[in-house]
Length: 243
Image (cartoon, rainbow, N blue to C red):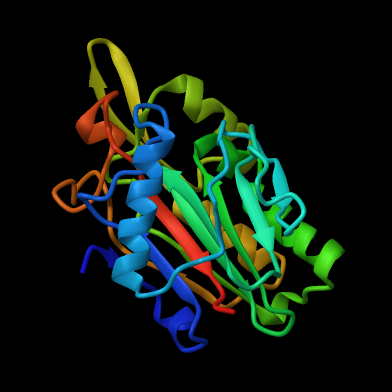
């Protein structure tokens, strides 16, 4: 199987997955036709054809958009999270080290796919998404399931002061480990997954499923920018409700 899925969502018969290689959803280097071919292959493997599949044009913002049948063909440029309550619409976000986060409100039947890179994590994009679910769909935190897909973990997310300082200013040193000095520069490791988990728990969400997979360590299975470089492919965090 060329993807993994989450037990907490499978029990609701929600289509959910995080793709593995050789799937590649990198719109930066692939044509729209190539991406559509990848989607078609994925749907064949899932044995389900969605009416629409929405993958926003991500740019490390905290912008969240609600997808409806009226706007489903929009570009969703500079959008890093999408939500919908429409069955038959699949939502995906791309990542190659960043976290793709899948959301499901079991009561109101609302789904979401969120792209949370280090900037998105620093600026609380997943909390923005939850707040939007509350505002537009009357979601309750007790009904929301959150699944954090494989991403780069703190074993490999090595940074310097330019990234470390903003996290330190916001969270202190709780999520930061000191690394080695390389080429005269102090290195640090940041646990961005734990930041999102703790922020979610802080607002009352306890239904959280997390993989322990580091895409950089497990580069044979998953695309990783750190491991593969600038031409790295993209994995997809995908979720959808059948009609």
